[in-house]
Image 1 (cartoon, one colour):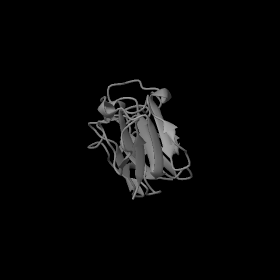
Image 2 (cartoon, one colour; image 1 turned 180 degrees about the vertical axis):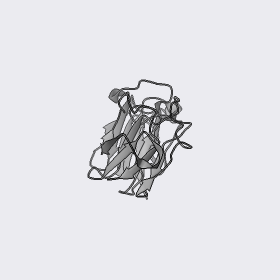
Image 3 (tube, rainbow, N blue to C red; image 1 turned 120 degrees about the horizontal axis):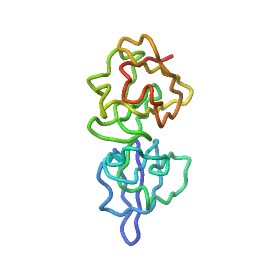
Length: 173
């Protein structure tokens, strides 16, 4: 079971086991990851309100980190899957956005993801996080994993202009 402990002065620490879209009102100042990999965001809803978010708008934490200051990254948090075969696609740059929410994919190939991320709209995919940094994924501009593609290995915070909001299928390399 994945978990993270969030802390603020004069209040008991709180352990979370799932992603949270609305943390901002709680004012947490420090985090310690017990297990798993977590993305912490400056704003609620995984930085949905920041269309051109930068790397400064997030913090990626794992159990290798000690207690970390999150006073500027306490709006929301996303728990990455522990399935090392997974890749997660996000609507916004730097692993952000809701509606569509982040989506996990684990099969050898996914021939059509347009229902999850409508291409050619602001709701298309704009970033990806492959849980296993050694696992390579091909992301395609066409359904059925044909034609133009690019390779994602590990963290890919910002799709190029050519592929931003355009990915329609994906496959493990």
